[in-house]
Image 1: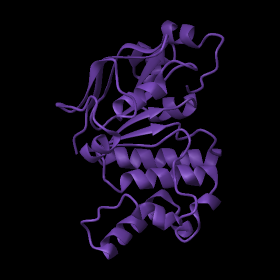
Image 2 (image 1 turned 90 degrees about the vertical axis):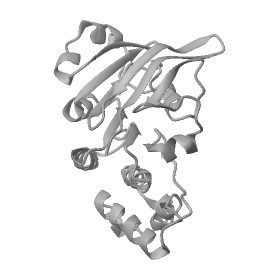
Image 3 (image 1 turned 180 degrees about the vertical axis):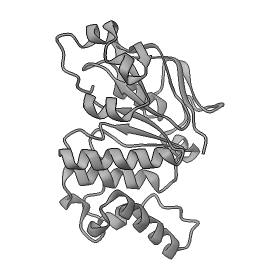
Image 4 (image 1 turned 90 degrees about the horizontal axis):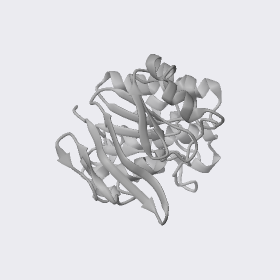
Length: 241
């Protein structure tokens, strides 16, 4: 399973606000890369630019050697890049299993699609809620459902937006374990997260954004003591855009 994701010189402005300025990032295949930065640094805008939810003003985005700049979210997803959102996007009035069948490959027989969906719900630990309305799940369980939902398409790269945000500590550990297991099978991850303990304990590399520009990139043990990172966070709280 390949899947190196690259953003090269990406810029994006909203009116007079420069959200991203010549921003470059690489999430190497088979690695877990963290993306951190203070409030308003451009993390979610970069996620949206990579996955087709925002059109960039300049720069390019690549999946391996394929340029995906400007592709629709549906096209990016079909090419093998799945993502979750800071605020979970599920269908609250459908059951958990019905949610899973929405993105399932219609080319498969119905029984096979259902079995695959149940396998993913078992993997994420919420199979016992398969018949429950998704709207009755806890916030952490909704995060797990969204992860399972993304995995239906078997993406090479998964972008997670605040997977630990608002989740109780026991579920945070469960989510981290699932990410590690998926990564050990070769899946690439790019993770936006404000929980520094989660990021530093999970990621192989960490990229730091400040004012729409990458100010540091490297292994967690280097990033945590980098003066540029400390300056970026000085007097601010590590929260998402």
